[in-house]
Length: 172
Ligand code: MN
Image (cartoon, rainbow, N blue to C red):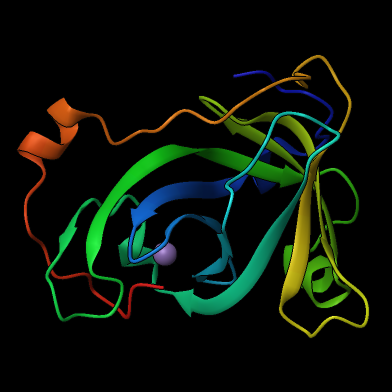
C-alpha cells in the first residue's frame, strides 16, 4: 500500500466496491464513516481514466456487517442476483479532516488504497440534478490510466462457488 499524500494515516477508513448482478449490472461504492457504510450505486462502475465522469447515485446507508458481502441474493428479494467484491481497501481524505462534513458539503477528495483503485479521486455532488446524483472522477496521478476499461470480478469459476445468501440489510 502506498501512503500517498494522506498526512494522517490513523484516519484511514475502509472502502468497498461490490459488483452487483441485479436486474441491471452495476457497482456499489461504499465508504465507511460514522459507523455506517455510505453507499453509491454506479451504473458503469468506477474508472481509472480521469476523462471518465462516473455517475454515482447515493443510496441508503448500509450496516458495517455488509462489508465484504458476497453471495447470490435469492430471487424475489430486493437486489436479487450475484454480489461479489470487485475491490476493497482503505481510503482517506486528501482535503479536510472529517469525512461526514465533506460528504455533507457535497465534495469528497479522497485517496483510495485498493487492489484496483489507487490514488486520488473526487466524489462530488452534482448541482441541480437531484440530491443523490454524484460524480466519481479519477484524479491525474501515477495511478491514472487513459483507455482503462473495467474487468468483471464475477468469473465462471467464482460463480460456480458462490452460495445463495440473504444479506443483513436491504441490498441496494
Ligand atoms: Mn447494488
